[in-house]
Image 1 (cartoon, rainbow, N blue to C red):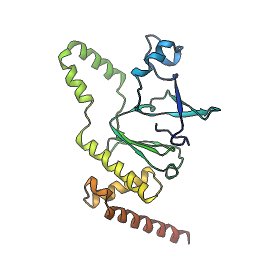
Image 2 (cartoon, rainbow, N blue to C red; image 1 turned 120 degrees about the vertical axis):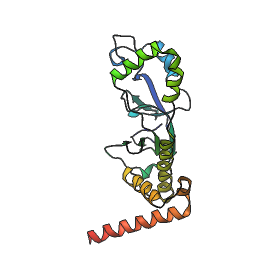
Image 3 (cartoon, rainbow, N blue to C red; image 1 turned 180 degrees about the vertical axis):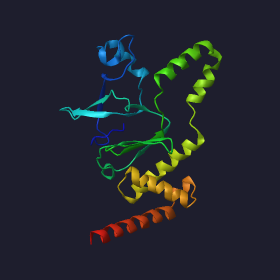
Length: 226
């Protein structure tokens, strides 16, 4: 689970049916109706074991279990990406932990619990577009399979961007540097300027280059303070 709280890796979390958006018959929307036993049974249609989700911690119970909620659009199941585990102290609490990297087509989530998600950025469709798509599906049933295939396909360039950003996170973790979106993007730019293949980012030479760059940055900061 990826979250922006201080929940430690290994702690248990509880996500109740009332704390997620579940389908509701019209005209009621999910927040306006009481959850039922049917909703609880249908939870497995939304989440199953080993799913990666993003959620917010509401509070801690007396037994150490965390109460979670995923009622916002930014929370829920995470797909088409990589989950990286880093030491939690490398991710500092900030106002924003969800980052839409539009130039890469990537969603980056820096969880304070040490879970970092790098995945495809999937923007919500406009309601009118959804209505048009539904109408099209009714009249062109033969194209449904092709549409589903296209929706579930991540472009090669986006997959490469995901891998490059994920490797930047891994390098920072190996070196013990704080992990921020700014530094991650700097490492991506550095690897590109050096014409490095994605897998070469994990090599010793690039790690040395990153460490030297950090030494230069700290030296510059100290001179300004002096």
